[in-house]
View 1 (cartoon, rainbow, N blue to C red):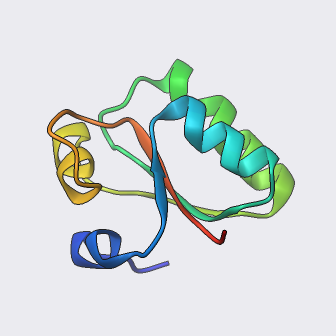
View 2: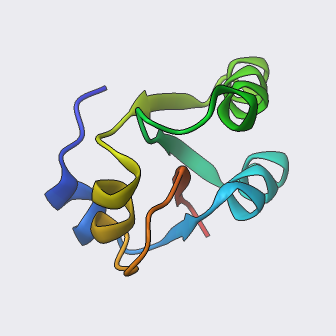
View 3: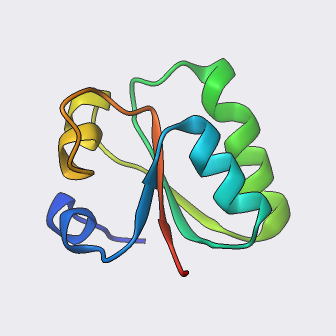
Length: 85
């Protein structure tokens, strides 16, 4: 999957943060999950496993500060998801 930070910024609906990302995956709302390359493995491993189980695409996308900025927040984000709600 080939996503740019501009694609993330322009996405009409997204959730940011590990708890919200997990919730969107469990609810079947996530279309693609974004994971910061520098996020801690113990945080992202369960998300990656759940994505693979639910057949949801996931991609590594920049650093935590870069992902946070792309999602419109002023702090870093380990994970985010583009959602279909």
